[in-house]
Length: 246
Ligand code: MF3
Ligand code: CO
Ligand code: CO
Image 1 (spheres, rainbow, N blue to C red):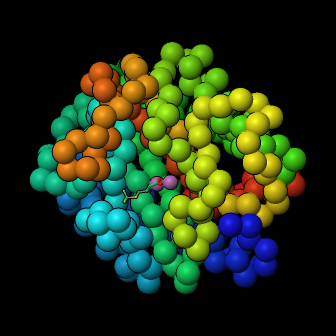
Image 2: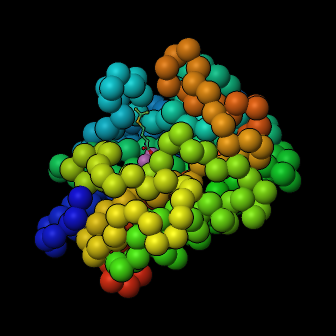
Image 3: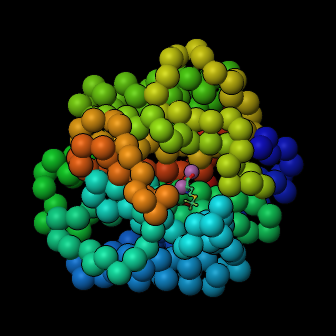
């Protein structure tokens, strides 16, 4: 949505703080031996403890308060009894609803002895977000953000997932416009002051193609290569974008 009033901005900021708190709480428990369901429980408790609602729970039948995506899982991993091991990379994606406003963010955490290649992959997902963010201001277009994310990722040797995109966000979790992580400069919808976006690079160490497990949710790389995800909710302004989940 385009946040028009100061109340809208304040509402989006407050929801962002809940998501940030949930990710911080998750980071503290993501370690060797924890199950992804235990991480999810911490996320849910944190969100509810702050008077908010975990938006993904029940969203199109999704069962949990977070998406937890390990190694070759790109996004939408369903929390389970899977035990996190040393060397894993674990993405936690959280969406929360507070007072009618949605916020959405994700981090990929390193567990124990992670290979140099995986460390670089995870760092690159974050850097790709910031490469895109450079173009996230009024007067530019969505394609400027998209192409910057794609260029950064591909120049560093990573695949850019096409099947899923970032998105507008506001009173609903997913709103127009789509924010692809690939595309052409000067293309797509214009960015306007007050537009609220979830920008979320999903990159792979190998091919960009993905497949979906029989559970209907879990998105994996087709070639089994590892993937990293980094997401924040931001408000577009005439100057620097405002990051709500950092
Ligand atoms: N948080 C995801 C996103 O970044 C959406 C998850 S929907 C769910 O857009 F149902 F899979 F949880
Ligand atoms: Co998300
Ligand atoms: Co999102």
